[in-house]
Length: 200
Image (tube, rainbow, N blue to C red; front, side, top):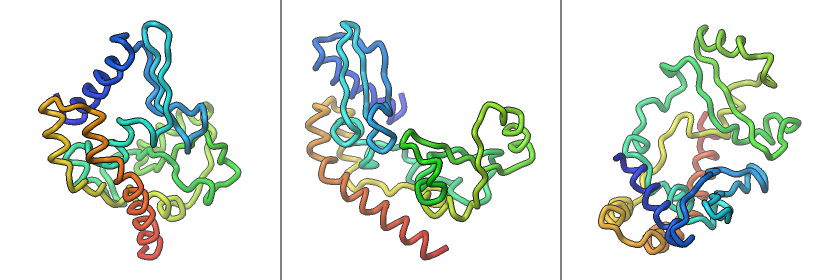
């Protein structure tokens, strides 16, 4: 079992225990009920009860947004570059409200970068099922620094993962290692965007 799967399994065990051992029947990892920017985690259980929490209040999302439980390769990704080997690159379109404000409905939009003729053919084949708006890559990239740089490894990741492996309480681990770092991550991301805009 890979590292992130182990963390996810531990989180589900935590939720099942909180909900009297009822089993999940539906999971929405990024529920847009309150919009794309305020997405929430939603879990429906076998007794028809629902758990719903905005991203910053859910313990799994606190760990995820702290960059503490990503795969090791995410911290040193070999494919963070302008010229990639893929035919298409698909991402959340962060900054769409600045680049294409007319398309910003707070329901989420995808950024699709066509990198080859094969990629172009794939998009053209389904173009009648999509709403497409062309934009300059340099404008889109300003607000998406993850196109070019890897996530920063959380300094206490090893201790957190050791706790997961040892079966420590999930809530306690998140309280101990993650909660104070979500704002730090947002600050780092903002700084990365600013640096990217200035540097490119």
